[in-house]
Amino acid sequence: MSISTTKDLYLHELGDLYDAENRFLEAQQEMLPHATDSDLKSGIQKHIEETQGHIESLEKVFAALGAKPKRETCAAAEGIVAEGQKNLKETEVPALLDILIGGTAARIEHYEIVSYRGLVAGAQQMGAEDIELLLKQNLQQEEATAQRIEANTPMLIKKALRGDA
Ligand SMILES: [Fe+2]
Image 1 (cartoon, rainbow, N blue to C red):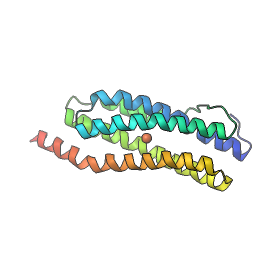
Image 2: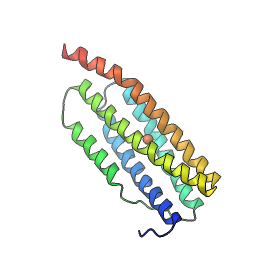
Image 3: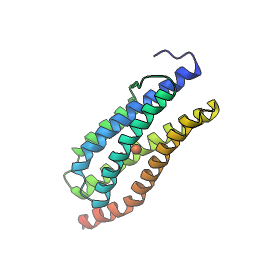
Image 4: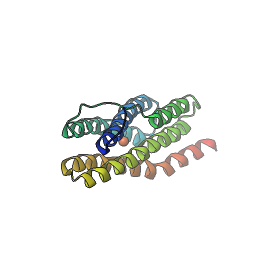
Protein backbone atom coordinates (compact mmCIF):
# COMPACT_ATOMS: atom_id res chain seq x y z
CA MET A 1 0.00 0.00 0.00
CA SER A 2 1.38 3.43 -0.83
CA ILE A 3 0.88 6.02 1.86
CA SER A 4 0.21 9.60 0.75
CA THR A 5 -2.34 10.91 3.26
CA THR A 6 -2.77 10.73 7.02
CA LYS A 7 -5.78 8.49 6.48
CA ASP A 8 -3.65 6.12 4.35
CA LEU A 9 -1.15 6.02 7.17
CA TYR A 10 -3.84 5.39 9.76
CA LEU A 11 -5.29 2.54 7.71
CA HIS A 12 -1.81 1.12 7.30
CA GLU A 13 -1.21 1.15 11.07
CA LEU A 14 -4.66 -0.33 11.63
CA GLY A 15 -3.94 -3.10 9.10
CA ASP A 16 -0.64 -3.82 10.82
CA LEU A 17 -2.34 -4.30 14.18
CA TYR A 18 -5.17 -6.29 12.55
CA ASP A 19 -2.56 -8.67 11.15
CA ALA A 20 -0.73 -8.80 14.51
CA GLU A 21 -3.94 -9.60 16.43
CA ASN A 22 -4.71 -12.46 14.03
CA ARG A 23 -1.18 -13.87 14.36
CA PHE A 24 -1.29 -13.50 18.15
CA LEU A 25 -4.65 -15.29 18.31
CA GLU A 26 -3.12 -18.31 16.56
CA ALA A 27 0.02 -18.12 18.69
CA GLN A 28 -2.02 -18.19 21.91
CA GLN A 29 -4.03 -21.15 20.63
CA GLU A 30 -0.74 -22.91 19.87
CA MET A 31 0.81 -22.15 23.28
CA LEU A 32 -2.26 -23.03 25.38
CA PRO A 33 -1.88 -26.86 25.33
CA HIS A 34 1.81 -26.51 26.33
CA ALA A 35 1.11 -24.42 29.45
CA THR A 36 0.82 -26.33 32.73
CA ASP A 37 0.41 -23.66 35.43
CA SER A 38 -3.32 -23.24 36.07
CA ASP A 39 -3.22 -19.41 36.31
CA LEU A 40 -1.17 -19.18 33.11
CA LYS A 41 -3.52 -21.57 31.33
CA SER A 42 -6.71 -19.80 32.42
CA GLY A 43 -5.16 -16.42 31.61
CA ILE A 44 -4.33 -17.48 28.06
CA GLN A 45 -7.77 -19.06 27.62
CA LYS A 46 -9.48 -15.85 28.80
CA HIS A 47 -7.34 -13.70 26.55
CA ILE A 48 -7.97 -15.89 23.49
CA GLU A 49 -11.65 -14.99 23.87
CA GLU A 50 -10.82 -11.31 24.36
CA THR A 51 -8.54 -11.36 21.30
CA GLN A 52 -11.40 -12.61 19.15
CA GLY A 53 -13.35 -9.57 20.37
CA HIS A 54 -10.40 -7.29 19.58
CA ILE A 55 -10.33 -8.52 15.99
CA GLU A 56 -14.05 -7.79 15.68
CA SER A 57 -13.55 -4.30 17.13
CA LEU A 58 -10.80 -3.58 14.61
CA GLU A 59 -13.17 -4.65 11.84
CA LYS A 60 -15.65 -2.08 13.19
CA VAL A 61 -12.91 0.56 13.07
CA PHE A 62 -12.22 -0.26 9.42
CA ALA A 63 -15.96 0.08 8.73
CA ALA A 64 -16.10 3.43 10.55
CA LEU A 65 -13.35 4.63 8.20
CA GLY A 66 -15.28 3.37 5.17
CA ALA A 67 -12.68 0.67 4.48
CA LYS A 68 -12.62 -3.10 4.25
CA PRO A 69 -10.55 -4.99 6.86
CA LYS A 70 -7.11 -5.55 5.38
CA ARG A 71 -4.08 -7.23 6.93
CA GLU A 72 -0.73 -5.51 6.47
CA THR A 73 1.99 -8.05 7.22
CA CYS A 74 3.37 -7.19 10.65
CA ALA A 75 7.01 -8.31 10.70
CA ALA A 76 7.28 -7.57 14.43
CA ALA A 77 4.38 -9.91 15.23
CA GLU A 78 5.84 -12.54 12.90
CA GLY A 79 9.09 -12.31 14.85
CA ILE A 80 7.49 -12.53 18.30
CA VAL A 81 5.43 -15.53 17.18
CA ALA A 82 8.46 -17.26 15.60
CA GLU A 83 10.43 -16.78 18.81
CA GLY A 84 7.52 -18.19 20.82
CA GLN A 85 7.35 -21.25 18.56
CA LYS A 86 11.08 -21.78 18.94
CA ASN A 87 10.71 -21.55 22.74
CA LEU A 88 8.22 -24.42 22.71
CA LYS A 89 10.98 -26.69 21.42
CA GLU A 90 13.66 -25.37 23.76
CA THR A 91 12.77 -27.27 26.94
CA GLU A 92 10.73 -30.23 28.15
CA VAL A 93 10.70 -29.02 31.76
CA PRO A 94 7.09 -27.85 32.29
CA ALA A 95 7.93 -25.14 34.86
CA LEU A 96 10.54 -23.64 32.52
CA LEU A 97 8.24 -23.87 29.54
CA ASP A 98 5.61 -21.95 31.52
CA ILE A 99 8.08 -19.10 32.07
CA LEU A 100 8.91 -19.00 28.36
CA ILE A 101 5.22 -19.02 27.41
CA GLY A 102 4.53 -16.23 29.92
CA GLY A 103 7.40 -14.25 28.39
CA THR A 104 5.99 -14.60 24.88
CA ALA A 105 2.53 -13.62 26.13
CA ALA A 106 3.97 -10.51 27.82
CA ARG A 107 5.86 -9.50 24.66
CA ILE A 108 2.67 -9.89 22.65
CA GLU A 109 0.70 -7.66 25.03
CA HIS A 110 3.31 -4.92 25.08
CA TYR A 111 3.51 -4.79 21.30
CA GLU A 112 -0.27 -4.48 21.19
CA ILE A 113 -0.37 -1.83 23.92
CA VAL A 114 2.00 0.55 22.15
CA SER A 115 0.17 -0.01 18.85
CA TYR A 116 -3.22 0.74 20.40
CA ARG A 117 -1.88 3.84 22.13
CA GLY A 118 -0.71 5.18 18.78
CA LEU A 119 -4.06 4.49 17.14
CA VAL A 120 -5.97 6.00 20.08
CA ALA A 121 -3.85 9.17 19.78
CA GLY A 122 -4.64 9.30 16.05
CA ALA A 123 -8.38 8.88 16.64
CA GLN A 124 -8.29 11.66 19.25
CA GLN A 125 -6.57 14.04 16.82
CA MET A 126 -9.05 13.18 14.07
CA GLY A 127 -11.94 13.75 16.49
CA ALA A 128 -13.23 10.23 15.77
CA GLU A 129 -14.80 9.44 19.13
CA ASP A 130 -16.45 6.20 18.01
CA ILE A 131 -13.10 4.83 16.86
CA GLU A 132 -11.34 6.10 19.95
CA LEU A 133 -13.83 4.26 22.18
CA LEU A 134 -13.48 0.95 20.29
CA LEU A 135 -9.68 1.12 20.44
CA LYS A 136 -9.59 2.17 24.10
CA GLN A 137 -11.68 -0.84 25.09
CA ASN A 138 -9.15 -3.14 23.39
CA LEU A 139 -6.25 -1.21 24.92
CA GLN A 140 -7.65 -1.56 28.45
CA GLN A 141 -7.96 -5.34 28.08
CA GLU A 142 -4.41 -5.59 26.74
CA GLU A 143 -3.11 -3.53 29.67
CA ALA A 144 -5.01 -5.66 32.18
CA THR A 145 -3.66 -8.83 30.54
CA ALA A 146 -0.08 -7.58 30.60
CA GLN A 147 -0.48 -6.70 34.28
CA ARG A 148 -1.89 -10.15 35.10
CA ILE A 149 0.93 -11.94 33.25
CA GLU A 150 3.64 -9.89 34.93
CA ALA A 151 2.08 -10.31 38.38
CA ASN A 152 2.10 -14.10 37.82
CA THR A 153 5.74 -14.29 36.68
CA PRO A 154 7.42 -14.37 40.17
CA MET A 155 5.25 -17.36 41.10
CA LEU A 156 6.27 -19.19 37.90
CA ILE A 157 9.93 -18.52 38.68
CA LYS A 158 9.46 -19.76 42.28
CA LYS A 159 7.97 -23.00 40.98
CA ALA A 160 10.87 -23.46 38.57
CA LEU A 161 13.43 -22.79 41.32
CA ARG A 162 11.76 -25.40 43.56
CA GLY A 163 12.06 -27.86 40.69
CA ASP A 164 15.80 -27.13 40.34
CA ALA A 165 16.43 -28.11 43.96
FE1 LIG B 1 -3.64 -9.14 23.60
